[in-house]
Length: 160
Image (cartoon, rainbow, N blue to C red; front, side, top):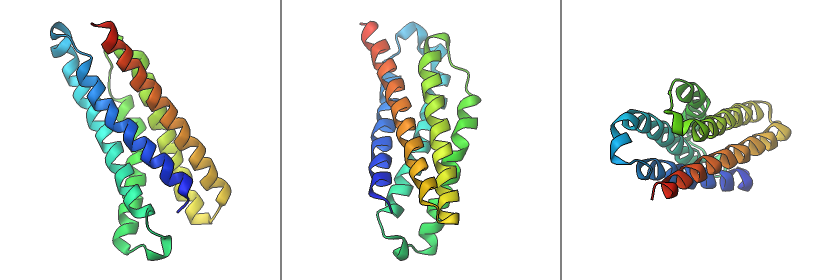
């Protein structure tokens, strides 16, 4: 598999690890109960994305000619997970103070879903241009996720 794709998957995993940690750091005691459900929902989606990227990373570490049927199932299941993130995030209602970071999180999930669609289509049609566009969307998703994380970190710093 393309080493650039592998690199962007690893970056996405690292960023997705940061999101749950930052969400838990941002709360003060008065707002914690109000924001707890939102946080749980976002962290759940972030963990699903991280798990999908972990699975893709595990499979793409191997040469495609070495993939087993189980690897193929794992890979395509992970792509389906990425394609479903947008809908899950759209169903989450963010508290007012999280709307900006939520929009970045949503934009990241949209990009990851588009990337998954292009990977799937590119592999089906053996179209290198589609696979390259998938990398562009993956990078875009990582940039949005990084901005969401930065926004949350800034919120955390402003609380102290």
